[in-house]
Image 1 (tube, rainbow, N blue to C red):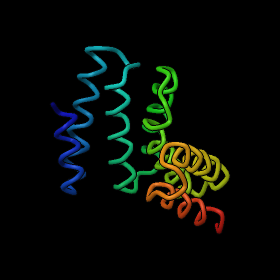
Image 2: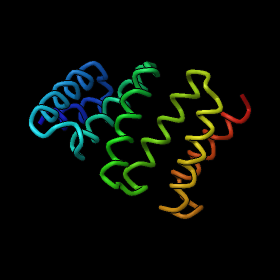
Image 3: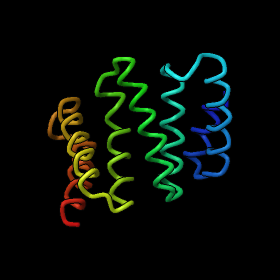
Image 4: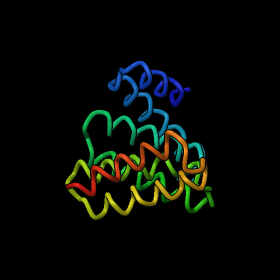
Length: 136
């Protein structure tokens, strides 16, 4: 499917192709099953990640906020949401919205500690990003 092609292109560093495939996948998924399902949420996450990597932080914020809205409505757990919240915090930080970034990065840290315990690479990354934000 186009979603998986988007993921592959993103991993290969081809953000243009990833963006095109994720946009196509989103259009198909929304037309087939509406806006509030896990497949749409996954594609919104992929779009958010592509936009973040392309330094398109406002677009990343929009995609990731919609991703989180859908996941929360569906009753998602912290595992699905933690990476979205982390990238959302990073995006707000890049936009200079440090209070909002700090809120999301703190939430991501809390989620990651709950998921992985304190001695995990994801926890270290969240702590690192939060530390940078606090220095701004």
